[in-house]
Image (cartoon, rainbow, N blue to C red):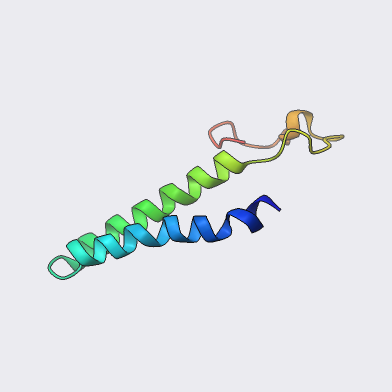
Length: 77
């Protein structure tokens, strides 16, 4: 339900940097603009996954603290 309510805001937040990059760098340095846009998009997706994460109230009968035992420690949960 959270994603349903936040989806328009997330889309706008992800689209605005692409528009800015296209307007500033895209006309002269296309590869730089594309690379910067992709880096930002990957960072933004990582941020959203770690920020929204798993609700603490979700039942966890098999996974203590809602984190499976096989989950790598370098990936935030």
